[in-house]
Image 1 (cartoon, chains in turn green, brown):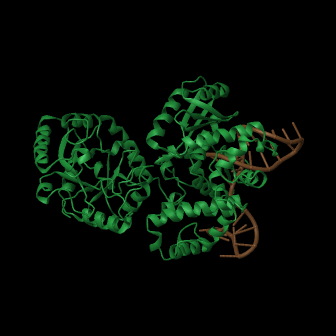
Image 2: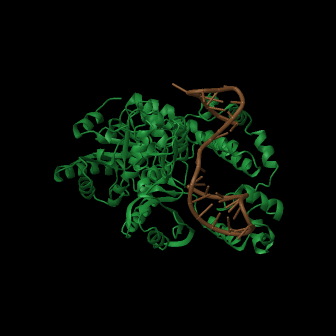
Image 3: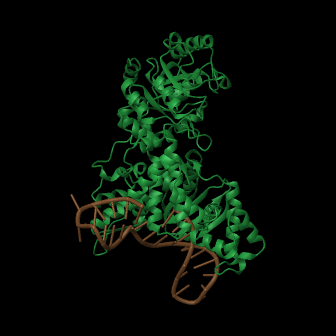
Length: 567
DNA sequence: GCCGTTTTCGGCCCGACTGTTTTCAGTCG
């Protein structure tokens, strides 16, 4: 919900202002935590009577939330903002500049924003400040230049192949016994800040040297004994940690995070009179009781193994058994794909052959409908011909079932882009929003509800229409969509394309808790689009999805029975 | 500011690296 997003960024801003103002770190963290809770909240914050019931939201934050919802502002924040130059908040985005330095720059060198910082560097004003040597100033200049050209976070679809290339390159270096990526990438987050690589080696110098001279490295940011960091030509930062092999599990757990998960696990250790850090789990006598594998660490803490995708500091520590989360191998069909009939690059047969190679028993051909002119959407006449072509291909291609379908546009008012008589001829109907993606929340909710409740619709494709980093997409009341999807047995899609990942992770959890079924599809337009399925799986796992809640895991007969269900 | 299976008060994760200083503050994750 947009109010959730607004309030989340307001609390984040609050935290930054508090930092610059020199407030207690715990108070700052409390605000960051509230920002995070609001960002992940699926329900509309305005519909929650008592925000204090949310974990991490106390009396004071709840009052601020209510104040904002009623008046559109938070007085305390406004007063704080008035006490410092607004540009100082931008300065906090510069790598290497923290609250102390920003404050000093302001009070001792009249630096109030990025332009005045640049001017201060140019006229040599900073050089006279204590603890401000040439290297520090050079680093600030470098960070400023980098900040101008960089986008904040990378999509998982960009980061994953780079991380895998770094790992496969470095594992060949002499002495390396273990190497794996950790961090938010291992947790499968849709966007990644930087890539964390963890390695064990008997020749650390050799590995550090190989890492710092990797192809594409434009700057070595850190070069220590156990820690190195580089920046790549694509703008991404990669960190390498070198750890003892015996402590690999402890380090992997620590550097996989999330920070919130680590804190929760650490607190659990403390309650058991133990101490946990990146080197292992230690008892009261300081003896290491677990460190080699993550599994051993969790076990000693009395926890089942927690899959990395669940480690977000939410309810994962309350589980009694490791949930059987969905895996790539569980997917037996792809139910949303395009051919050259609309904007795809493959023929029906080529698409089917590609799907067969991936081990699917079924592929659905769902080209665009008539209103998607930009995507060469099919007129009713062309669709009729297409259905005939698909049925013919289904006869010709052995070893896979080809379903005749459509990705039919959901108009702004919720009507579908084909008449019911035509839709009834199809094996499968995926209904998706493609236009009017800025309409208000109320209209978007009504629009999507109408599509979910339509008896001929099987799946809602990329329900919000968001594109990561480009457009936020629709902002409907998600819980009411989940309830309707459960009641009508309409599946909600996780579009696996890494630009979309829509539904997002938190929505997946909300949908399955409400009893709705999920469909994970690649929306393939070309052969290698099938490779993106892994990102859909990671998002699904982050949403605690198990195979029994996903229609793509059904056998062919079960899938056909599900498609034949009545609303 | 938030929280509670010892607690409504007293904790709140903690180590590595850099740059500058000469023993450590600041930043990062």
